[in-house]
Image (cartoon, rainbow, N blue to C red; front, top):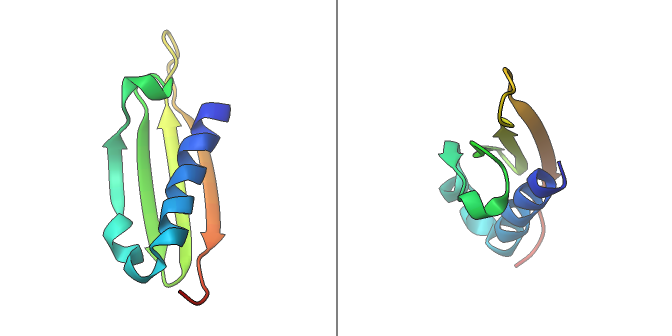
Length: 79
């Protein structure tokens, strides 16, 4: 869960730094590098106006269901 939190928060931080291009960050089930530490890890990023939602899913070996971590942020402000 800590690794998933880090992945989501890094994504949100990148979006804060580039808040005029939020739509360019939209993605669905993008595979994460194995170095992240999340087996079968995937990231989905959704943007609704200034509201950003990042969902990270992963499945541990021998598990039958996915684990999920979701972070949201209202990305607004002056550049």
